[in-house]
Amino acid sequence: MTTLIIGLVVFLGIHSISIFAPTFRDGLAARLGVGPWRGIYSVISIVGFVLIIEGYAHARHEPVVLYSPPFWTHHVTALLMVPVFPLLFAPYFPGKIQATLKHPMLVAVKLWAVAHLISNGMLADVVLFGAFLVWAVADRLSYRHRTPRPLKGAPPSGRNDVIVVVVGLALYVAFLLWLHLKLIGVQPIPL
Image (cartoon, rainbow, N blue to C red):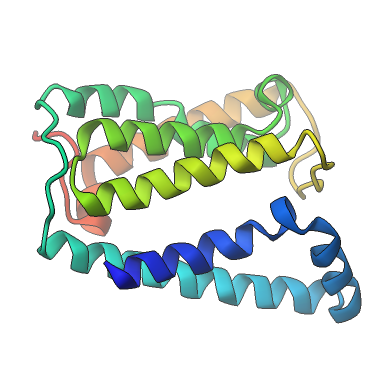
């Protein structure tokens, strides 16, 4: 569990600099240069992500049950996950989805976290998904006091929504049927 927590602190910590210290972040990026800052940011993010994966895998071998959700909650999770993949792509393909939600990736993270908290009751699950949920809520709330940085992506278009939905749903189906088991080691819905 310690590795999971360290990974979350590293990964969410580097992603929280813009939330809690935007002036520090901007100053550091200016001093180092945009390229080096992005490189450092990426390396720290990858280290945190790897620690999260390792820590979560180890924690699942020594499960601590906090609650036991009924089987049907897996179907609720699957349903809540339907918009997650399209919403992850939406910031890079600006259209009505992005304009309506403002921060579709944060909506995706919140949906992903809530969906998994509904159907997973182990301590490691609550720590992992709960941490991401708290971070996403804090990040969204911070936009009241800061301006989001523009993302590089496709030019705005009404067709982008179609691309986002088609590609996102295709990836969701692939994840549901094959990738979740291959990458996470759990079949989300028994086939």
